[in-house]
Image 1 (tube, rainbow, N blue to C red):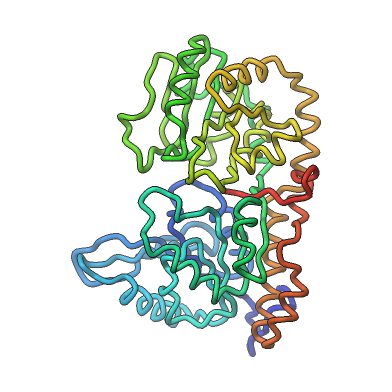
Image 2 (cartoon, helix red, strand yellow):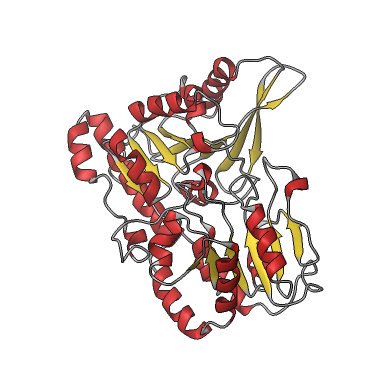
Length: 410
């Protein structure tokens, strides 16, 4: 255990984590799961989700999800006030579990009151996205985020663009990368067997893996699929906040639905090109897709629309083809199919060498540990100085070599 963390009187030096997340653990395996599964090596992780209904009295449903990880799902009766009931339930739960030394980690400001009966060693805000720009965002979210910035000891952002937008709001803010489990995704290059869902789909294949929501440019996909009837477009992931009736249909468009994270390498093994057809709108202004390094690790050429945190650094460094129109997107796919694969893979290996989730976790946890120490010593000014807010993380330096700016996740 890091010696920056205040030690308890007993022999147990673990530090637990209450993570408050608008993203459910079992939805799509991404940044929260990667990080919290690693924080579980330091202590117990309680991953608190949004509430679900119950016919009886309010309670916390406990769902084990691996070593030292428990999903906490509040179950509330109709008309209950979550901000009144859930803090008491969590406070009582913490007492029953003998949770003493812990941090509170937030992915959404809307759960801020839920920690009211806790006494964390530090408060962390991992700001993955500009949530206020998403469809259906509650109107009070902006004010709640301002409150979270005021009490947070550390703020992490999910991308360079988001960091630039938020940096003036906190003195101890850090951009961190969209990291990669390279070993997991590179398996795609050693898999020859076709999965059942794809074996009857012709080649070439252009694939997308991720949530299909308001950030996805359905018109662009429809136009590109029409322009290139010789290509087959495969989409993997859940459809959220948009009607399935709005999804493009065609003989060369295939929807495989949500798939387990463990299956993604064998799915990507059957693709020839990966795509990121994101709409250019307020909901995508600050995103930095985790799928960018995942596609690259799987050995795939990548075509994307002009998302700022993809253009810089992946586009300017020539790792991703950037297109702004359907015609450009179609042409970029054609160019990707004729790329020198060996040359690209050699460059990708160097790019991804310092972008592991393990390295990101180590750097984040060191920053949190120092913040814990400084908060408990009362020396906040020294903490801000020593933590060098906004400096580039080692894990992002390879991907940001052109601009000297960190790349981050969405």
